[in-house]
Image: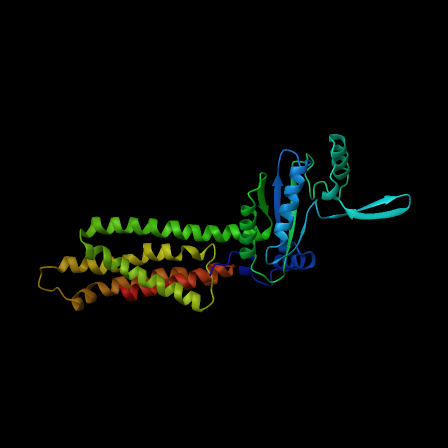
Length: 317
């Protein structure tokens, strides 16, 4: 499980956190996913129909309660003391001539309600605002919105904004980093181990040790309901790099005693056990110090579970 929302790791008593949550709940800002549509000129039949298609498609995404765009927003006009309410852009009766489109363009850009909110001043970019349901998985819905847009194969350029897409980007970055860094550091460790021991055993045993400790650590995190964050996603990488050192020390001692008549586990552990234990304990102490020295919950969690992983690496070594 990945939790990209940084606000979840700030103390709930923090005044800034309280203000952010209040504004989000009061005005719904944390539940707005924005899709921007860019083309050379929005005031053409094809561009407006494409915008309407996009707007209707986004409304069908599960978790989206409503979509506000130029093609579905209601416009209020005053005429001789009367109030006329209707859609801003009537797709059934679109302008036909260039002057008619120009008149519509000038009307929309002349109202502060639309310019700078739903359309740019140069009439090349329109904003579609998606209101999401409360207490939903913002990352999941953002991904569904992107998938829906990709299915349409629009001619316009599409951009995304708002907190939900920000969280999606962080979530994707965390997963992308894990997929890239774990194999990279593993390859580096494998090469280093082989150059050091020149044997398959010398490579497999240290890697097996850190693999077990990493699986145990992430398993306990999962059982405890602690998700991966932008900080804790480096725990596997750290355990592979740091945790392999203990089994390397033990294995190296075996190689040193090979052929001397004292090739036994008891002798090796007696001679190298205490130094390895002290090395692990000091490393664990360093990570545990994050509990007392950090303001952020996610850094405290990082310290606890990295220290736990180092302990497991020591035991497996």
